Image (cartoon, rainbow, N blue to C red; front, side, top):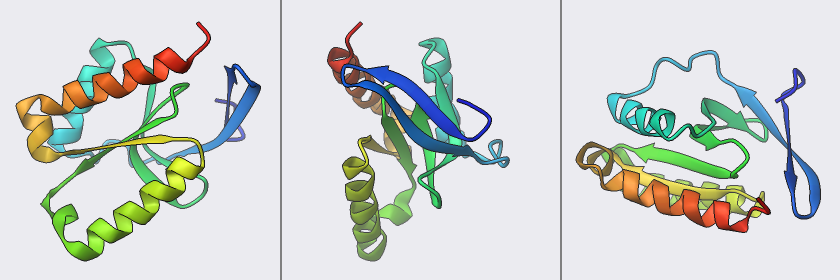
Length: 130
């Protein structure tokens, strides 16, 4: 990541770039997000936490170089209005080249989120040239 907030990385198509702006409030995360962060740290996965993508879209985690966004959802995301907003947001992020992985607080606490995230990482790595 360069000082201008642009993330450059190599793909089979060449050098790509994405705008990535980090939020200074990165330590205000929920305990469920800390579970995910610890898992990523142990796996030595490079990530940004509480960052902004393409301007004003704040995400919980961006896995750098893998184009994976992880969102850890509390129970409020089950409500129709929020679920519809999340769906629209996910479509936009997907159209921008990201894979969006949503896990619930419950999945984070019981460990099943780690399996879901690991599958997304393996799939993304399978697409990489190295």
